[in-house]
Image 1: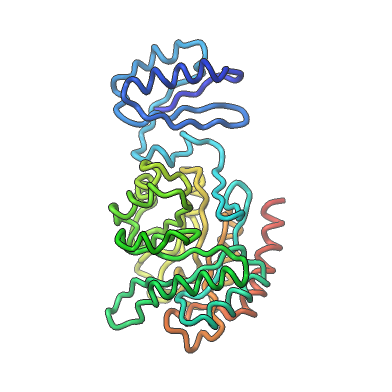
Image 2: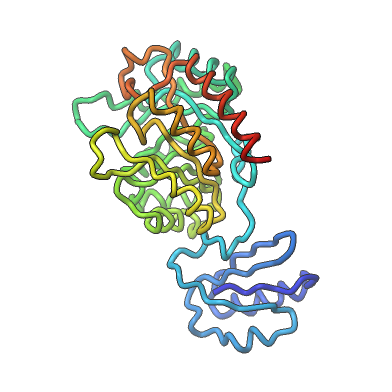
Length: 334
């Protein structure tokens, strides 16, 4: 249920209503916008007398929300959310370029790539230290050592970094990580999502390989319901009957998610296509569709990459693409 207050309502009267609703056992999600204030009621709202609330002098309207996701529902928070990561803003008109290798392989590799993507305009570095692999024989990442190498790259370039967490047990290792990524395979790892909800860190939540948008939003709800509202959604392609690309990039997910939620939405064209030559076109398509950012894999030596070299751009290719994205952004924003 949402309660929209009239313009000009004093904080005292607003807080009086909030306290009364909280006494009914409800959690209140407060959204103060430029033109209206919205109270999102989370919990058992069956005991709330809608007619009584509607009759209050400070209330403009009362509506029930049929969708199961509440905290991440745009009806609860009409204005776009801006998620900040060490000074980098994502959402609400702020576009973020995130780039780096699929896996951290060595200090030389991660520092070289970090310097290259920063020079091209990237604001955040990506790099996998813990890698969920389909085959148990594939490179699983450098784990804790990889995290330390990412910190070195951050120190060398000033770029905050995002890296994937796979298990609640690994949380102590991620205390100095700027943004935590939940990969596609862990989108419905609900124990992990609950624990991430207790952190004060931005969370990059990737859509699962065969999950619906509602399921993605319900996963975001797990994080937000536990207290962390700094969630960024990522469309990274879904499994379909198509056999020419690694996955199928669901471009329509970008405007649809923007309609359903106030959370920022970024796109990963690298995992969506699995082919470096297709990444630029899909990156530009995502930008034109209104994405709030791009996360792209870049490797200084893709042929010899230990993970996903086929979908990784070379630094010079990324530089060229980043320039085109920025040009398109001016058109989209204008």
